[in-house]
Amino acid sequence: MTTAIIIFMAFAVVLSLFSVLIITKEVVEERLEKRKLKAAESKPAEMPKPQQSDEPQPIAETEEEPIVQEETATAEVIRFAPRTVQTLEEKYLALDGKSRGYYDEIVKYALAQENVKRIKNARYEEYKAGNTRLVRLLVKRGVVVCEFVLPNADFKNYINENKVNVKLASTVMRITDEGTVQAAKDSIDIVVNALAQEREYKKQLARERRKENRRKEKEQR
Image (cartoon, rainbow, N blue to C red; front, side, top):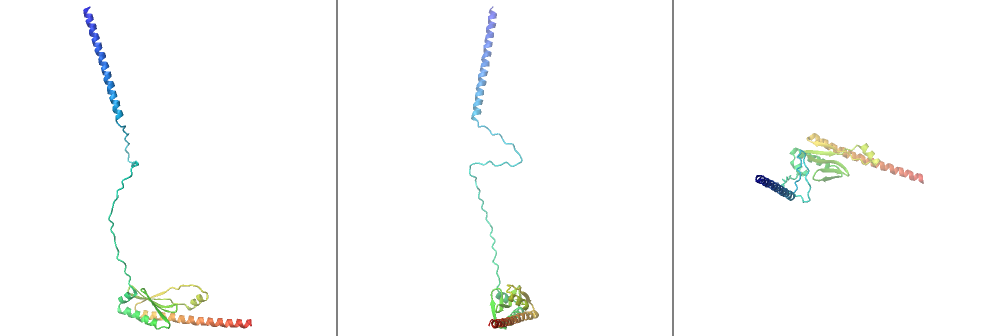
């Protein structure tokens, strides 16, 4: 009987210890669970990492003002020397002796004509009879050049009668020897003769108009 009681008491003690162990385990697990929950609440939520791809990702816009990095560069300034344009006088003085002689000979011939006026500027020298150019002299690339407006008498009479405004093109002649000097003189003569013919033609027209006016006056009487 005594043995049975001892066994029963031992069994009860073992059962009590087992119950205490289970309760202790549950308490420990509950405390651990609470600590984990508190730690999870205090830790900021982690954003999911975006998947990497080969395409460039757009940069997120923020309300902060962008930082502008100013770059200063030293520009190299290249200065060109102003182009010097020679005057007619300077070009004339740079000519050789023969070319200056050709130039002077043509000028003398032009000045010998009647009612001639001279026009000279930094680019050219010109001789005119009335409003008509006899010759214009220039120096281009070390060569004397003459420009003429050679009139055609019939054509000029036509444009005068019909009051047509026409600008005639210039004839350009390079003076390189005695032959071209003579050609320049002959061209001046052509212009002078054409002017004389034009004056005579205008006189003839004026005589005819006066004659026609007198005839009309007689008829009216």
